[in-house]
Length: 235
Image 1 (tube, rainbow, N blue to C red):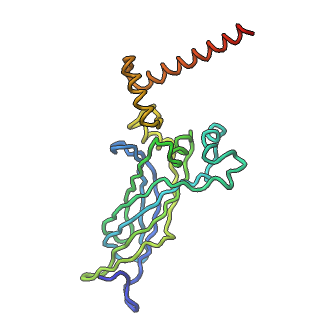
Image 2: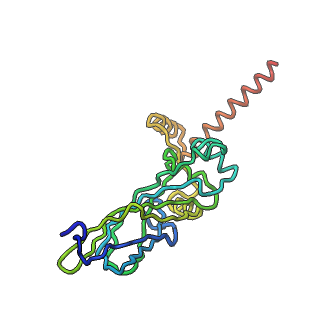
Image 3: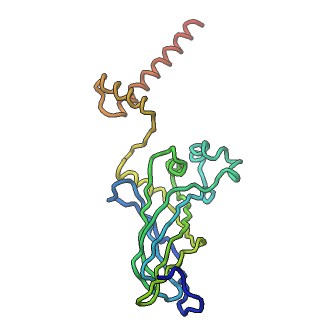
């Protein structure tokens, strides 16, 4: 086995480019997932026996327009609009891997990208804050290409400059989320707070976390209104 073609060898180096042809929601995945529909094209005519591909997915937040409501939702990520030129840096969304079977010329394949409501992760917080349009994605590739004639295998790296661009429609992201969490959002709390809320829920016989939080909010609003009335009476 050889890790690269020998000097003077007649075996040409492969040249594989990658293109994203579409983005759809995976309605049958175990968790929220979008599918990047991809095409690989080899330009020299060399037979590719297999391709072990790695892909780094980034969001490029400067590549879209933001409504005022969206800008307010991402202010803790990027600050106010005048600062965005320096603060809106690419956000890591995922690291994917896929093995392509043998092909000559071109082949189609899919990259499955998990998405999440974990808004403590900056990329997911950004997606959750967008209402419409698309999120610009940059796909950065690496990996190994397996080629060679019968009886010998040549292993070549996928060059680091190989990349592709994609657009993730917010309607697709929302569809992927709604398969598992229709009309819902998530809050992260400490274990101690979770345990206290669980005990409160049990004591009051409440069904579901919406009922727990709704009851606590009503109590807090009543307390606030009572305090305002007391201040008015004393004035």
